[in-house]
Every structure is written in C-alpha cells, then in structure tokens.
Amino acid sequence: MADLSEHEFASPLRSKILTGAIIIVFLGFIARFVQLQIIEGPALSGAAIEQGLKKVEQIPVRGTIFDRRGRIVAASVPSFSIAVTRQDFDPNRKQNLPLLSHILGVDTNFVLDKINQGGFYTRFQPIKVWRDADARVIAAIEENHDQLPGVDVVTESKREYVAPVRASHLLGYTKEISQSMLDNLEESQDSDYYRPGDLVGTTGLEQIHERELRGVKGLDFVAVDAKGQRQSRLNQGITDLPSVDGESMQLGMDIDLQEYAEQLLEPYHGAIVALDPRNGDILSLVSKPDFDLDVFSGKTTKEEYQEVMLDPAHPLYNRALQSRYPPGSTWKLLMAAACLTTKTIPFDFKLSCPGSFTFGDHTYNDDAVHGMTDIHSSIVRSCDVFYYRMILKLGIDSMYKYAREFGFDQETGVDIGHEGTGFVPNSKRMSKMYPRGWTLGYVVSQGIGQGEIGVTPIQQAAYMATWANHGLWVEPHAAHRIYNNQKGTWDTVAYKTHKVKVPDSAIELIRRAMLGVVNEPGGTGHQAQIPNSSIKIAGKTGTAQNPHGKPHAWFDCFAPYDDPKIAICVLVENAGFGGDVSAPICRKLIDFYLTGHREDPPPAILPNTPAYEELKASKYGKVATPQTPKIKEVVAK
Image 1 (spheres, rainbow, N blue to C red):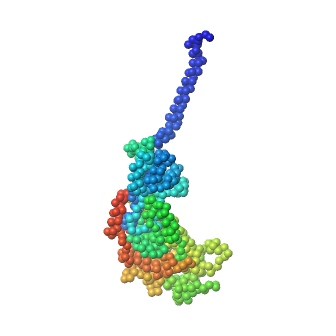
Image 2: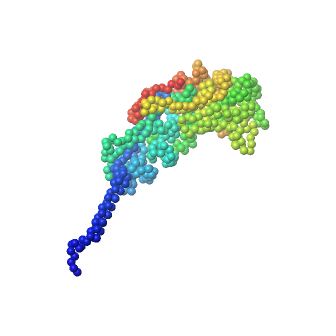
C-alpha cells in the first residue's frame, strides 16, 4: 500500500467534518451555558442560596390586654420552642431522631408526626416540634448542637395572666393551629401568614381580635454551613424584615368587679353579665363552671386538655353567650311594652287575678291571688295571670316582632364569638315545630317567658341596658379601644345602637314599675335593695320552670335609677326563685361597683394590694410586652 502524505490524510472533507464537530460541541457548551446562566439561572441561584441561607421567622409579641383602669389582664412573656428544619435534619440518620426524642422525653413517632405535619409547606422553613421548652431541654439542645443539624431553639412568647381573675370565657385562649384550621385559611388573606406550630386565637377576644393582637411576623436571613448550622447574619442583618408587635387592647372590664362576680357565682352553675349601659362596655362576664387559662398557655399536654374537655360540668361551655334558657317573668317587661305599643290594652287597663287562669281544659296557676291588677302592679308583684291573658290578646307574631326589637332571637354582635341566638316562636315556627297542628293553648305560657322561648344572658343584659337607656339598645362589646401602633393613638371600638320602637310613655311606665319591683312593698326583688343607701336599683325577677330540676333563677337590673351606670343579668341554674338567689348577687355587685363596699370577705390576692403587686412583680419581671402606651381609665360618655 502506498504511503499517504500529510496533505492527503487531512483532506478537505475530513477537515470540514472535524471543524463541524468542534463547532457543534462548542455550540452545545454555549447552549448549556445559556440554559444554566440565563434561563435556569435565577432558579438555580435561588436554590443554591436557599441551601446556604435559612429564613428564621421572628414571631411578634402578642398585644397586651388591659382592664378599664389600665391594669394588665393578659400579657406575653418569653417562651422558647424547639424547631427542626427538614432540609438539614435527617430523621433516618442513626443519631438524630433518637437523640432529639430523648432530650424532649417523647417517642420518636411524636417528633416525626410534627415534622411531617409541617413538611408540606417547605423543607427550608423551621418547624416547631416542642413548645415552651424548659432550661434543661434548651441546655441539652445547645450541648448537642453538632449532633443535631437543623435543630434550633427559637424565641417566641406565650400568654401570662397576672390579674386575680379567670375571665376565661371572655378572654379566650390561643392554641397551636391545627391542620383543619390551615385548610380553612387556604382561600383567605391569612393563607400565607400561618404555618404549622403557630399559635392562633381560638376562642373569646383572642379569636375575634386575632389580627390586631397577633402583630406581623418578621424574617431573619441567616447563613448556614453544609450541616445546617448557623454561621452568620446575612448582610449583617440589614436585609432582615423586623416583626411588628401586636396592638394592645383596653377592655371595658373592671378587674375588681370581675373577681367579685366570679367569687359570688362560684358555688353555682350559671352566668353573670354586667354592662355599662351608656356605651355597651362589658364590665364583667362570668360563666360557671369555668377553667384556668394557664392550661392553654404554652405547652398543653394531652392529659391536661382532655381533663378540661371531658369534665362533666362542661367548663368550656360559655353559658353567658351560648346557652338558651326560658326567661321567665323577666319577659313580662317586653310583653307590657308590646301590648301598650300595639294598643292591645290602654295604659289604665286592669284585670282581676284570682290566682289561676283556665283556658280550655287546662288551668295555669299563679304564685298568689293578686286581686285587681294593672300594668304597674303586674310587674311589681309579677302577676302571671295578667300575662296569660295578654299573650292571647297580643298574639305570638306581635310578641316575636317586639322580641326582635329588643335584640332577642339574634346575635347581639358581642366581640367574643361563638354566640347563640336564642329562640322566639312565631306562627310559622310553631307550625314547623308542630306539623300536626297547634292551638292557642300551646302559647299561653309564652306570655310569662316559658314554653318554646329561649334567651341568652348576654341578650338579657343588653335588654336591661335598653331600659336603663330609656329605650336605646346598645351593642355589648368587650374591647373598648385598641392601640394603633402606626398612629400612636388609642382608637375607640365602634358599636351599634338603635332606638326600640316603643313610645317613651310606655317605657317610662315600665321603668317605674321596675323601680317598684325592688323598692315597693310586695315587690318580688326587694332583696336587691342596698340597706341604708340612696342608690335606687330597678329590675325584674324571673323564675324559669325547668323540666329537669329546680327552676332557673333570674334577676335583671340597672342602677342608679336616675343615672344608670351599670346593668346586670344574673342567671343561676336550678336554684329556685330569682328574687331569693340572683337578686342578692346583683345587690352586692352594684354596691361594690358604685361605692366600693364589699359584703363578702375578699380572697387572699386582690388588685391594688401588696400581695397583688408582689405577684405582678414576680411574674412580670420578664414581661416581653411592647413599650406600654399611655393609658387612662375608661370614662363612659
């Protein structure tokens, strides 16, 4: 075979093929470069930064809650949680999970469940697996930091209650947000705010005013090494987003009155609601039995939660807002107003009360033979026969109309949440309840607040404030004003009012009768009188029949008569006559609120005592509240 020269080997064809191959490879490099740097560059760059950067949420301090005199009711103290970042923590690694579980004193499945609950959101976001860690746990985590990559101690806060009151149904509580709550928030404006492990207001004020109280989260950007351990702040913290603390809130509640009301109702099941009739401020709200809010602050064990949940006395049930009780004779005020407004009877109407009323084949008894009775005496002495007759004249549809006028059969709108509406029948509702038919005999007892009628104590308190206000219904509310962090001002909470469609002459006639209930001979509420006092109380007793036991005892009132500053509803379940049980409780609370005189010896710790100040100092030496704004006592106008 002949030797090929160098020129013959590198023929033009081969040169072109080689050159083409080099160009193709070069173009491939360029294309890949463009893909990596331009097309996928931002995503890859972000991923690279994400792996070397940890975003640590800064949880804001929840707003402080004050009473009407500016005293702390609920504040926030520092709390520490153990958080795990899934990107850096490998639960399958031999030491990681067992060591962390051992430190926390829980089963490994507990930690895994917590991690898996939060894993849906992001692998790079710390997930809280243990709340309210004590010093032992924190020290053990720090000591074993190198063996626990991705495990950090994060700072947050928890509620602390220093005031000597429970007010559990008014304040409500926060708890760790559940998956169902997160699912319900998917379509809301809060969908991006909450993460597994976050605390959220669940009941009471804490729930209704969650957005104001919670504040705004911040973010710290922290550089980490390959093991996920923190190395330094990114850009020396310049790019961090600071959190904004929650807004403080001042309540209409008076700690002293709340404490005394809780003490007086302690032996019973029932509710007390006291309002300032001038503006609807809730001065006190008690539901018994109640529970200790400290159980829900910080870490709540399963056993602690079940103990409250499974308590046969149902302490979580808010009797002041959610219950439905027949109003008994307190309903007679509404019946009188409706009859006079509709001109069903004239103002000077009278009838004879023989002590019973027979309609059809049934006889309805009264407590006494009242003889000749007019509107005034029918209220003062609480004549049932008068109102057995009135409901037949008035009709249940007119009764329903005026019940709605006074705020019954609907929510009051109070900012505590989970409120019931009660129930007031009309013809349509009766036909639905009794599809086989009903007669007027079914409604006779409704004239005295029995039968199908059901009301809540908060409705009754607003009802009583309406009489105090000469017919102006005012929406009850717990929050009086909220501190605007941006403006640096206290913003008064708005509330609704409406004038009931009842003539002033009818209202004044009924108000004078209510004064007689307490102050005239034969009045059923004479035990509400304050001995040797110029303070005049006006009110109405109610004894609501109960098929399951003794009657429920009502007393609704306001004082002073000429310049009302407080309206109260007291309901005691299965206690007997309202004038015997509930009226004395009202007397004590009104006397204490208006004069400071207290009939019953106080417990060991009360506001404005050395013991109270010592307790506050011991608890609040480490309070993590924002700078307290200047706060003054609430003065109703």
